[in-house]
Length: 119
Image (cartoon, rainbow, N blue to C red):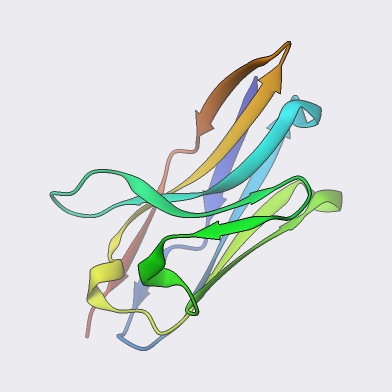
């Protein structure tokens, strides 16, 4: 079992920045990949960014160059630095972790944190 707790959401003006944080606890040794998904109003949840144990990253095309994912293994944390935010970035952002145990993958989600981009 893995638990994920996000923080850092809020209201920001277009063009502004926010940093989301997620603390991972539980069976951390089984975690293979961590990242962030988001679900905007009336939209499906989709990938924003992920980072693997060897720090390979992947990004949604619309956030490349604006968002940066990073992890601090000493703090069991993953971060999403978001810049040049636009109203289309408004969504609930979910921290995500994929574990691998005895050859089986399992996905975990945090409770979500609201990011609203509005003037």
